[in-house]
Image 1 (cartoon, rainbow, N blue to C red):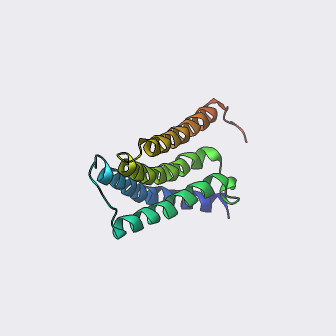
Image 2: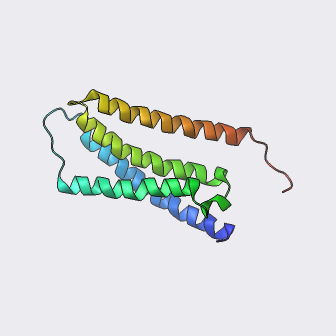
Image 3: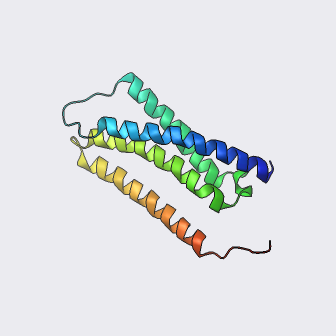
Length: 136
C-alpha cells in the first residue's frame, strides 16, 4: 500500500469514527444514573458487542499494524486513540450499570480510561516535542 492510499483510508476511518463515538456516548448516557435493578436487553448487548468489535481492533491495528506503520504515528495517533476511547465508552456504560452493585468495577473502568488518556497525552507531548524535518 502506498502512503497516499493509507491517507485516503485514514480519512475514511475518521468519518467512521464519528459514528462509533456517537454510539459510545449514547450507550454511556443510556445507563448513567440507573439505580434500580436493570437488565440489558438483547439489542443493547448486541450494539455493545458491535461497538467493541468495531472500535478496539481498528484502534490497535492503526497503532501497531504493519501496513499502518508506513504512515507517521503523528497522522494516525488521534484517530487510533479515538477508536480506543469509543470502545472505552462502551465499557463505561457497563461500569455505570454495575456501579450500584460493585463500585470497584466502575473504579477499574475509570482507571483504565485515565491510563488510556495519559498514554495519549504523553504520546501527543512527545510528538510536539520532536523537531519536524524541514528537508526530508
